[in-house]
Image (cartoon, rainbow, N blue to C red; front, top):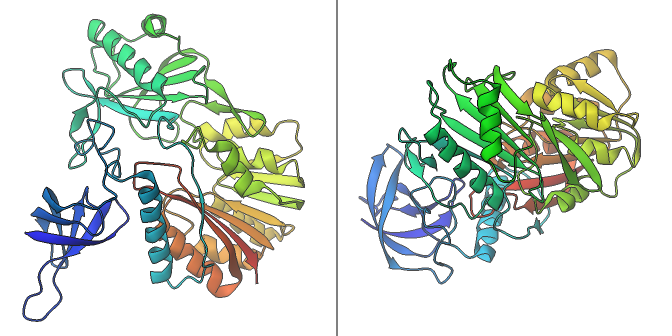
Length: 429
């Protein structure tokens, strides 16, 4: 069918309406790799009662904002969704999505939404690739869980793919009894340090530390640390073998953060300093909480302007690095879930913080945490979100009872993809 694309939706698609039937509005159709205003021919690939998904056949009328994608794998690879749009257009699409998501949730927010963006290429400091049965490296397909072999990745720091390709060559010449399923690589901003993690689904009998040492010797430059672990998704994964260092030092905002294998850290190596300044700058007081603290990216900076800082983190891989990064500052690292920490705080009536920084995972806060935050009533909060839908839900809960939004900034942490980060400053009303 022929479709006219109306607007972008979160997830990378654009929305169109099928022709109306019997005077009723046509069914909503979502089409990837398109832009608002374009007319396209598309094939329905999934037809539900209230919506349909389609795949692009050809563009009948192109948007003036359409450009030639930089990566030859774009379209098949599931990593990027906006390479067919100029970068100014990408930012405009993300702002439109953010505005509409907040408005639909009934959230009152300032008219102006700020933007923080930098170089949109070679920004990723972490990538995770899978191996095909024949040993080729690739990302998951846009359409399925199949692996799309790749030769390049222009959004990744160059050293990451080079190291992955060197590892793939070593594995081809030195195969394990149990194949390596995936590989993850993480580098510091200047690519001078590199952590490599190999994932296997069963314990191989023939992979030992000398085998990893031989792998390390083939890498140029040599990896700071390599480890092999089971790909079981456990919070504390089973480590089968390891060589080198268990962590690297990542320089951001004037401090060298220890980041361990598997620990969360912001992915954009160009934005770290400005991002930290946006969240923590011009804020001071006696007590600050950093909830979902990770390795302490924000907590370490808050120690400069707050007398006391409490950083809460539940993931074991991040918690150990958090304790190290806060050592000697007087700040306290609490290894706990945010929900458990807030419940204890309400029971024990601990001092109210002057500032709370929130950086939850994609699932957001949820009803109980939002209710506890409203009850605690800190004068200021900063909410860092990586999902506009859960952000809108949580902001509705916070602003309906106690808080108002002072400032919203869209942070383009993931150029070329549909993902968007948002930093929201709130104050008690």
